[in-house]
Each structure stands twice: as C-alpha cells, then as structure tokens.
Amino acid sequence: MDFFYSPLGDGNPVFTILAMLALIVVGVSGWVALAVSRFMKGGNGDMTNRVPHLYGYSVCLVAVITGLFCTASVIRGLFNLSNPLRGDMERFSVSASLTSFEAYRATYQRELMFRGNRDAKPDTLPDAELRARYEALKADRIAGARFEAARSITTSAILLLLAVGLFGWHWRWLKRQTG
Image (cartoon, rainbow, N blue to C red; front, side, top):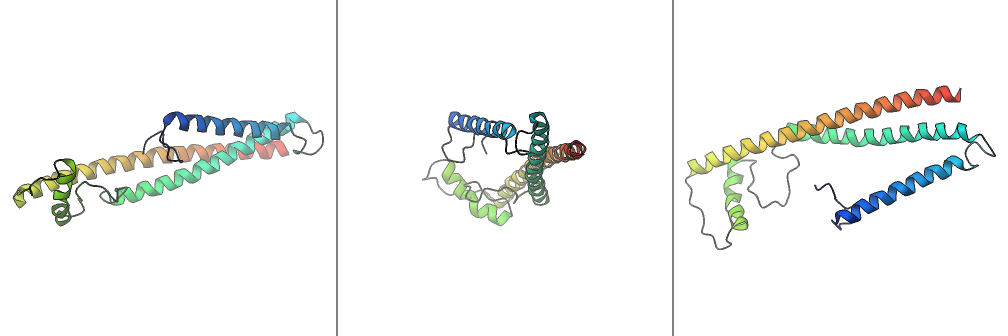
C-alpha cells in the first residue's frame, strides 16, 4: 500500500495531503472552540481549568484509538507470521502460487504469459528444475513475509505500549486534577 493512499481512490498525493491538513485544521479548530465555549463546565467557568481537562481527555481518546489500531495490526502480523505464504497474499495476483508445488506448476505458465509475450509457447522445464525454482521462490517469499510480519508486530507493539503508557499517565493526571 502506498503512503499516499487516498480513501476516495484518487491516488493523487497532493489531494491526500491537502485532505489530511484540512481534517487536522477542522479538528484543532473544533477542539479550540470547545475549550473556549461556555458549554464546558457551564457558564463563565475558568478557561484555565477547562483546557487541561480537554487536553487530558483528548490524549486519552487518541491513545485508545491508537491502541485499537495497533492491536489489530499485531493480530494481523501474528497471523502472517504463522502462515507466511498465505498472509497478506494478493487474491488476484498474476504471480505463480507458492502454496504447493502442484499449485506452482499450474500457475507458472500464467505468470509467464502476463510478464512477457501473450503468444509465448508453453515452457517445457523438467520437473526437477521447476521444483528447484519453486523451492527457491518459496524460501524467499517465506523469509520476506516473516521479516515483514516481525517488523509489523514490533512497531505496533511499541506503539501500543506507548499508547497504554500515555493513557495511564494522563488518566491518573486527570483524576488528580478533578480532585
């Protein structure tokens, strides 16, 4: 997945960056409007008392949302680690399947047709050479998938620990503020 993925399917990085900036501006403006409004703590309450509460609750909310996404990422990574050939595999890929040698043999010619000439003659590799290619590609795909899964699990677990720490610290801080 590309970093500049647009949920609207546009694929234009400038549009995606502008949309993210607009969401940030709207979110910060809403937060500031809530902080200065009379709605919080009713009437003409002390604004210096409202801002810390909004800050604390905002950090806790962001920590909870981050924790949920990180938990889902860790679970996905564990599944990918448990079965590296099937994890995050593209369903409609033109590459040869590596789940079994028979599947590889059946999809090998399809891969050749899509990569090169559509009028390519069927490849007549002996089974021994085809099996050697299959084993090499399988080992490479497993190693790559395990590395990606381990990296995903590690980064998500670290971010999850930071989110839990931020939530815990700010929640205790809020409890001390309210008395």
